Image (cartoon, rainbow, N blue to C red; front, side):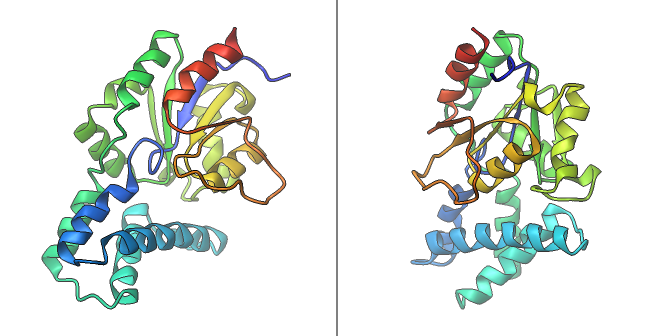
Length: 228
């Protein structure tokens, strides 16, 4: 029987902030290629975090994001000017937040639940995204893997949450729209919700989230259900 949920930790990119919203700016710069380039950029970004963590070659998420953008331009055979690159990176620091976020986070705070972001992003990136979205007020902790220099899904990255809340992982709800992240967090011991925004199939890794939703709107109701 799962224990009551005493805190919640949220992934940032894809969960609170729409990583594919940057496709609009990519489309302006590279007509006809925006959506495809946004997908490549995201895939390569995550691939680089995994390779660097497995091989103990950490650089921060800002550099990873820039390296992945450079690869994306080459892969799609697009000439990217320096000012375009700068504009895209600046836009990544201020990604669009999903519209339901503020209302749901307010509900969770009203329930007395302490909240955190637990992200691969650098502290500066997270501060910028939270500031531009107006969501900073809802979070008790903004936790970056930079403190351990290991990207998710490394156990050291997930351990930041229990350390910050001073709670065991099974009493913390971990929320992410990235199924790979949810698999890692569930293996680590968190109580997990996968926000399957894109209607994707579950990863075939022999592990399942405790609950599946489609947006942040599903989180508050689930906490109420679990805590009675």
